[in-house]
Image (cartoon, rainbow, N blue to C red; front, side, top):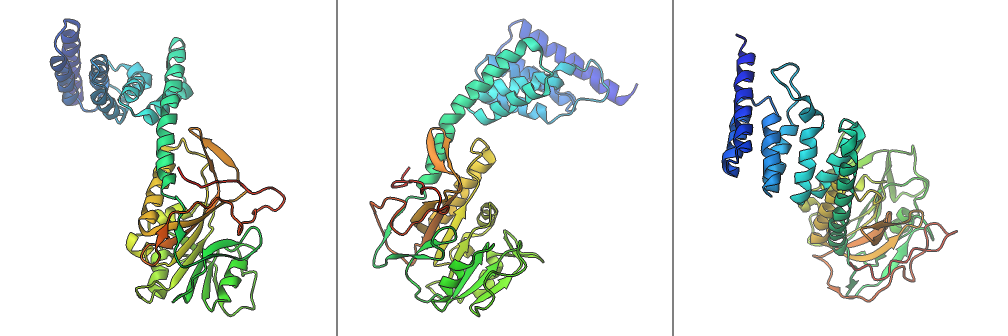
Length: 388
């Protein structure tokens, strides 16, 4: 007899024994144990894991049920086999996963599973209303979780005042101008990522006797070509350096003088790539700048857990090393409602190194007197105190 056939026969016998124990009122431990023994006898089959997950759900053991269903979902339907229960692979296990995920507090997994069930259309038509309602319940719960996560992340961007120094606008009157602390002690290098057709910030910084290294892979030459203080490279900034790219680490290696007071400042406007750059840069490298001004993008998909985790990681990494001294929303973007919290989906933040500056509470309201709307044909976007 074929070995796979023998394994399937043992599995089916063990699965039926587990179901019989359940129908006869055996204890939770006995029933789940029987299902797991059946699963162990044929690791290529999911039916027993569905049974274990379902029994966990009926017994309010939702975290365990969630894990058993998750394991089962990693198993592909057997191409052939004895008594394969197709409906479990089509929708049964995913449905059980969704229910247990909800009650285990994994609302994003529940929502994803429900949306997949509805999208694939394999679940019986008389179950669609229930699955749709489950998805709505998950969205409602998720909105509370998302609000907490977004408020926690944005609370790391609380603005502060700085003792002894004022702020000043550098660059264009509208889009392309940024606010910095007016302090250039020991600074001889600036890194400008993202140039496009406007190098006004770079030119203003070079007037302070600072060499500005410009990086932009989308243009062949910079807007200003007659300024010896500007050095252009048609390269992008990435998490890791390569033939056509630089990283913060590679540029720190080239330009850092290792003084106690860092000699480099950064301006970054790279259309959503900033998340990867900061996420992949070590704190040791990130600490080697005096000021960083960055335009953050892509807050228009907050339901995506992947992006929410990146927001939190990046803001935490930067805020451990830097304090926020200025914020400004780019009014070419818009406000979005995230769990009834209004945030701009594109905004500029100026960070100052905690090892250099002393911070104090501020009652400053944003936009302030130095700010100008990026789009001069529309009013600026009111952020208030930007405290969450």
